[in-house]
Length: 330
Ligand code: A3P
Ligand code: MG
Ligand code: MG
Image (cartoon, rainbow, N blue to C red; front, side, top):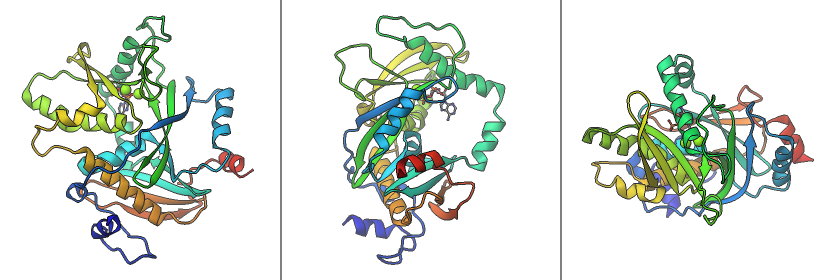
């Protein structure tokens, strides 16, 4: 039955042996029952220091756990999957995702679009400052250890990160991905990771019904997608005024977000996000057949368009590092 459904919304499916050329992102096509999404299990973690490099020991640990056959269909970053999940509702920003098959697993890595590059290079000072507010909020809310208290002084190094590595399954796609985690709850009896993790967010204070509606429609979609994927159960949000001062703090349980937005007219639906992701991964699987890390299948999507792809060999898009290929092959 799933195969039939897939077939209907691929524009030029040419039978069993040839992959479809494009994939529609039209949201109505994905209003089906919620696909199976297994509770994500943490299988590892790593840290990035202030220069964004692994420390020696942790690097060893990472290599240790990937040396045998991975046994997963996809390896990627949570942030890339978040973009896929929100695609049926995205009207502003497109994306480019590069995919290569190596030792049976498909690796997915993002390529910055021209529009995103221009955006990044022309950010105003106000925008730069506002971006920094989110990190500063983290500093105000978090302590370095259970007995400590937050120290809001000093400059935030935005390179430092703690990342969780989770394994899960979406329908018949086995996934292994990593995502940055902001903090964990203080309670020592909290459930094991990722159940003890907390996502921190800041957003503009909500003063009017229109602002509330926009918050539900746009912001909560991104927040939900980001936290649902790795199984982070709660989001602590700081609402800030025009000067960037947090005036209220509210906790949003990730699993309650879909109920919270139900009264919005024509609002986003988690099932559409997950079904689109499922079909996108099926599409990638049907296209990325050759096992060769030097071969990159570049998937491109722009708002109001279908997902398309092009194939590049030994190009600027090749992304799996030599050292990784060497270590995994030895
Ligand atoms: P806020 O989202 O609270 O503003 P994350 O919430 O994903 O842990 O990211 C922490 C902070 O990094 C964000 O806090 C924001 O300040 C900044 N940030 C993350 N992704 C960004 C993006 N795509 N553009 C601008 N700022 C971003
Ligand atoms: Mg974060
Ligand atoms: Mg955060």
